[in-house]
Amino acid sequence: MIKVQARLRSIKCIVAPRNFRSEHKLVYTETRPMPRKRLGHELLSLIVRKEGGEMWTEEFMNAVQPTVTALSVLCTVFIIRALWNWQTAGLGFRSIPSKGSLGWPIVGETLSLFRCAGDSTFERWVGERIQKYGTMFKSHVFLHPSIVMTTTEEVKFVLDDPHKQMRNGAPESLKRVLGRSSIFALDGKEYRDIYKFLNDSVLMPKLKPKTAEFNRLIRHSLSSWEGHTVDIPEAMQKIIVKILTFNFFLIPWQGETADQITPLIQTAVQGTTSVPIYFPGTTFYKASNARRKLDQILLPIIRELRSAESGGSSNYASLAEKFPFKNLFDYEMNGESISDAAVCDVLMTPILTGSLGPSTVVALAIYHLTENPSMLQKAQAEVDQLRKQKEELGETDLSVSDLKDLKYLTQVYNEVLRISTIIPGIVRLANTDIHFNGNVIPKDWLMLTPFVMVHMDPETYPDPSKFNPDRFEAPPNPGKFFPFGRGLRACVGRDLTKLVVLMALYHILSDFTWDVVSCSGKLKYLPALQMIGGYRLSIKSRT
Ligand code: HEM
Image (cartoon, rainbow, N blue to C red):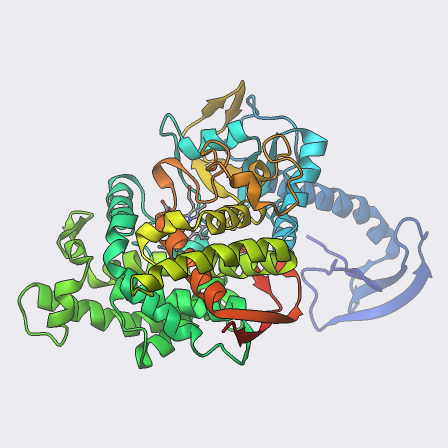
């Protein structure tokens, strides 16, 4: 078997005699121009001779070159074919929507989607494809062949999953940062049990007894704003994290633990939709380490609470009384008593999932009110009227029953959720071939539902890019407005978000006026919509 070695200036192709040894000698080299359109380089040809033996000449090289070229072409075709088969596994070319593009092998269209999510032009990514391919089209994202479904009817079909044919399609990074027992990583009975458990624990009736503490926490945090320049999204995120860690772990919001936890949660959250490469410097690496440190802080608390719950000695005996999630200790997961680490996953998930959205909503509400002075005046008048009523009763806290008196502020809240859909859409995986409107969504394909498109549909919301709280004078139509998703997997934090956002806006509007110091005007998605580059206000007292 013989190979000959030649070297091109910029392409290296190895063609060396397999039996090339020290007794071989390079006897002749020559550099000759090749036709530019073939190679665009010069060929350096080698002629090798064994001492006293045979010589492989340029003629020989010319003879083997077509074979080498043919083999390279075959290999390339084979690799592309294999990648294509992998990418479209299970496809079988049934009646899937024929329009759309699967993009590049393996990565598909993920990079372009990430790019648009990074500068919040996700709607454009979808919009351009709707123009080209129609409302339902194929793509390939997050390592899966996918169908993107964009109309209200299509999105509702996926969210409602009427025939129970879908499972969660959460990205790997989310599952790994949130943990194996997180609601995002569970399926079947365990998923349903944990969902019900979490959902029931943060619905409005369960939040009522906590409003006094939430009010105190918000007022205490706001008390340091007066006379300072405050970056609203960042300051609000700190407040929300404290509310959530108090709610789920009973962590006192003042003190060392709360101060340690907040930056760790912020770092972990950013890694939930990153590329899951555990390598120093990557977002995923930082998030995974932050999650580990959070476990180191929270696991001992869980152990103490469990010990107190089972009658053992514990420093947390008095807290355990109030711990709203103690039933979780009796839960059996995969036929075994739930572990402390799994309890940590279950309770940490809503904190990590819910820490960004509400702070962005508060910041955007302030932004839109500031840009529209007549709306700000109207909202402030409503807040002042309620505050006066409460003062007459000797009250300062906002209670759950007060929310109905904040009608205009609730409209502002809904309009922010519509115009800036915080979670732009959800992903599900098909458990089986799913038939929908004459199409088949093949088993294991991903379904992407950008419900941001539903909220910007001009037929439902005329002039959709205009911030107009008056469009929600009548309560939102649940069939055309789902910032929190809907159906069996609807966001468990929807009531908590409404309560906390309105509470924060109530206290901010009644206590402060402000001047804008800087506003980058930049938003990005992933993991949820967030204002980046700062929205800094110089805060003054209203009185
Ligand atoms: C503006 C604020 C928020 C928005 C817009 C929002 C939106 C959403 C959406 C769209 C989903 C996906 C529903 C689905 O898969 O069909 C979701 C899931 C979830 N949200 Fe929220 N959310 C917010 C705040 C919160 C808060 C404060 C919490 C914590 C209490 C929370 C906890 C969760 C959890 C645990 C899930 C997973 C539900 C599941 O997989 O079944 N969210 N949220």
